[in-house]
Amino acid sequence: MLIKEITIRKMKMTMKFPFSTSFGTFQDKEFLLLEVTDELGNTGWGESTAFHSPWYNEETLETNLHMIRDFLIPLVLNKEIAHPDEVNELFAPLRKNNMAKATVEGAIWDLYAKRNQMTLAQALGGTAEKIEVGISIGIQKSAEDLIELVRGYVAEGYKRMKVKIKPGFDVNVIKALREAFPEIPLMADANSAYTLDDIDVLKQLDEFNLTMIEQPLASDDIIDHAKLQKELKTPICLDESIHSLEDARKAIELGSTKIINIKIGRVGGLTESKKIHDYCMEHDIPVWCGGMLESGIGRAHNVALTTLPNFILPGDTAGSSRYWEEDVITPEVVAEDGYITVPTNYGIGYEPNIEVMNRYTIDTFYFKG
Ligand code: OSB
Ligand code: MG
Image 1 (tube, rainbow, N blue to C red):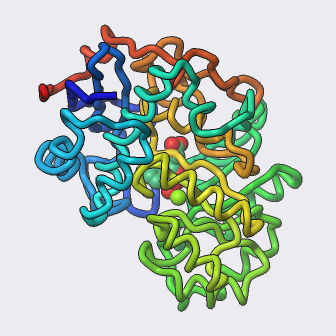
Image 2: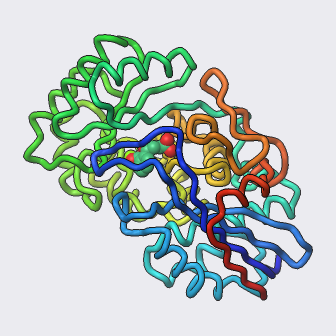
């Protein structure tokens, strides 16, 4: 396929609720959508998961825009690309900027699947017809507020609850939740809020039968996580620390992680995600698909990836209506009784809703080959 046109939209949408992590709180979400068109008029869509500010990783929507316009588009525009795996190789000489790379690569995967009359899931080699849905709950004012929220999500059928923790909002809160819900699959995500000095606090979490604790230590660490894992019963799951197959291999060899959260943007795209998935499967490391509060385009990519066989644990990809009054795709992603049914239309399987998209587009950039 020959890449002939690329359009980038800068979007601004407001989530239904403020989302708080150990870094801070936000409700407005600015992000990029990208559309590629081939010589036959087929199109494909991708989403950047970079946020407005660099609190999760070093990328931002503006650094993504810069990378995509000035470095990535010149590598693919007017190029004949037989398979999206080639995009991963074309981008490899440029260091990091994984979310920028994944935006372009994801759109080309969607295009490739549509052009070859396959679902994106099939193009990736996925087979699941429905996927299990978990939910990620931000830090709340009190343990009581959190318990009430969880009660609602249990009733809605979510397959596991993930709660954000930070120093001072951890053992007390997890203890209260466990007492209220002795049986639910429960995990905690610290977004790097602790150091090895906090080992006594982290050890106390072992009492509560958590399925895992996600990224307790520094966002670039795999050494201290290995030390911590030796002291903990609860499996550690790395999120922020894993940017590539190489990172995953090293972390697994060191014993820093027993489970991996795969985020397509963080690892530079679907090709790298699949490589990590395959490596983990060979090494008996279960994976699950993380979320970045995506709009429907990114959400659809997550759904497709999650159909691969080693996505054994429920992910963070909930239905559109949990986040948005209206989503940018039709139909929206729907979670029912804890499952999302994988769409059977070609490509990402959902149509972009241009009318809704236009309402939230604050800038557009067009490139022609
Ligand atoms: O650490 O997994 C995370 C959201 C933004 C940034 C980082 C994370 C998260 C979530 C929410 O946990 C996942 C979602 O519902 O999309
Ligand atoms: Mg996380």
